[in-house]
Length: 451
Image (cartoon, rainbow, N blue to C red; front, side, top):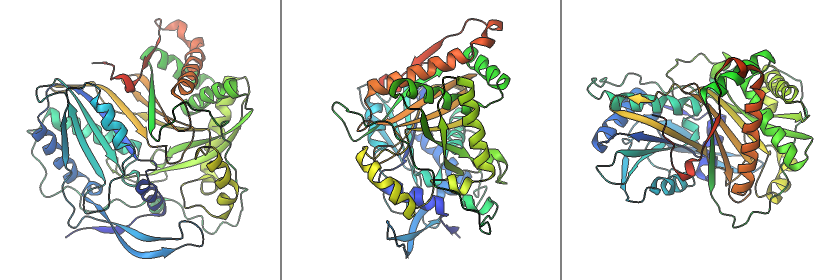
């Protein structure tokens, strides 16, 4: 018998945006070692058996009416009854850049309605005998956050490394994970009102040859640089999230002379003890919060401000600071016109600090050479969306942007200056370590091997 439950409020918003091309999540695993598609399909079946959310499709029930857009939408439900298996598409293309074309297509193509899971997988390679494979994973954000994406990537690679381990039968867990709201304190009784914080945008860009697509630039801080930065973060009583936010805010200040900016921070609520969930729960348990920050010339003061204000709104004003809900009148009144005038951009900067990805370099006969991560921003979103993952002692920064609103040259300038600031910020602790450097990786031009 199948399991079913209605989507929570934040899941409903994410699913609604997904259908219109918003916040589609894509992760590409660049794997060295000959892969048999049948083995990958077997691994996907194992993942489905282990995670109820991967066995669920979305069906739509009665109409929900609103006095504001969207005025009406059908109530979505997760339902495992009759869900098909995760289908693997295999693309053999002699073009070594074929995976980039698949990435560009997947990140702008919503998963359609139907009885299929809310994830699709494409294996891209130059030939059946190719030694380098690109596993493109696309998902509806309502079913998967950054933590879950890393967990599924780890598990997929573990199964590929040792496919002989018996598959659990029947599925390990048959209960759908709860919506995010089910595990949070009920603050409905609070009568305290918090003033709305409007978005602060980057100046509108003149983009040569704008295109309706989302792109990503990647930067990597090596282990020595990352360790020095983390030491400096502790010494200056802030967080890595605060330091990354400060680096991009100072780069923005230098480029555009903006003295104040709002920042959208994606917060994994599992990490703050508000949700009592098993560690292997796959779902979306993240919120997006808006905070406002003055930008000074002091890196660590800006980092502390970014960190402190985020912690403060988490403790007191998370509901008011969250943008993860269908907009009310105040949002439309403040945001609709400037958003449309600025190529559908909201805040100038979004940052998510995922923490340790848990991914290894080697999985049996396979080597994970690189990972490309992004969310779609061309429908709407911040000008820059920075995704930070710790991996193999280093720090990966994926800087996503919409090609309608920002040029690659502009994003490259901002990313390079932010990375230079992070490198410099750890300088005071680097004397005790070997000489380190910051290496650049640009997934748009191919994965950089770290095996």
